[in-house]
Length: 115
Image (cartoon, rainbow, N blue to C red; front, top):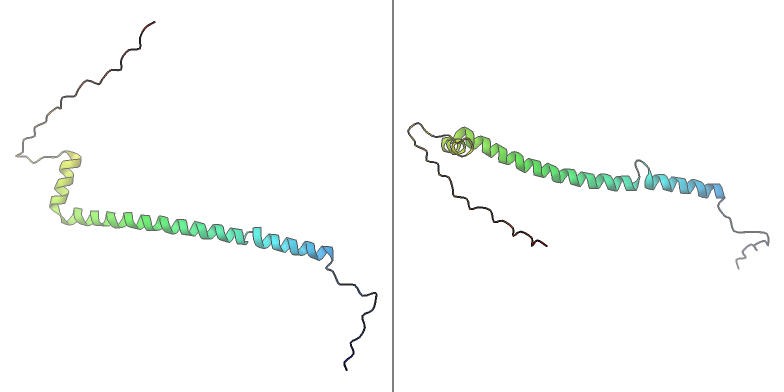
């Protein structure tokens, strides 16, 4: 038969001292709110996702501009079309007719009744 030693009457459960609990709280606060804490890490991940989305948009714009540059340097008809539409250019042997459109007079609001 195994006999276990009897517990003495003066034995009390061990507790952590107050100062060690304070140290644990400070360490936890730094781990959560510090410069390299968990909350800062979540903010950085969110900012990284936003920047990657902006980068994708800028890359799309750049691809469109590269296509425009290629069209301007290789396609004379595209260049002529842009010169005509944006700069109003015409060839020497062309005659340009300009028509003014009749504009209707703006409807006037009825005058408020006088008292």
